[in-house]
Length: 109
Length: 116
Image (cartoon, rainbow over the protein chains, first blue to last red):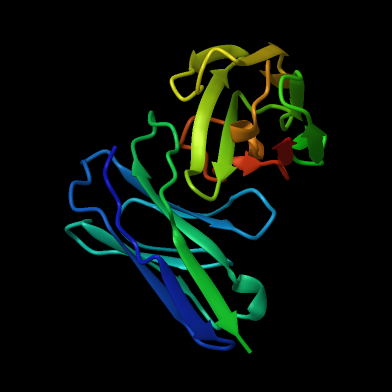
């Protein structure tokens, strides 16, 4: 499984765009990049998954450069309710999900 | 669908007692996972099943832990005997596919276990 590195914590204010970058230098050809969100006292929730370029859904966008050695989760116009831990996971479709420590995002009013 | 349902939400037990955690996955999902979360160790995968068959239990801490999935709609995680270091939040998750589902894993609300 590819090792991932992401910031331990980030702060933001309501209405701002937040970008969380994850490094995965040893990503393999068949690996996908997946992001989960975990609110306090809840289980993680799938946000978005991608392989290359850009993926967008109603929650976030995922930007993946050509070399795929990093990825950036972009949350547009965050609100207080986006305060959570965000996990970046990299692996193949045959890999189980192994969570790292994630990035703790705190959104202030 | 009501999502992944876990019970109980909270469990307080004395050291040495048997604890059973329960999970009902989403109907139609063919994978079921048990995770444990603590402040010190984060989210750990304990075991997962595919079509009711245990596939990987390498994360189960020791023989005191056991998990079963007698049918597609029910799974249990049992700790016998329980110890204070087992105190954690235990999550059950289910998925259609190991990792290639476009919707990822669906987690339950967890069971907060406290062993005193």
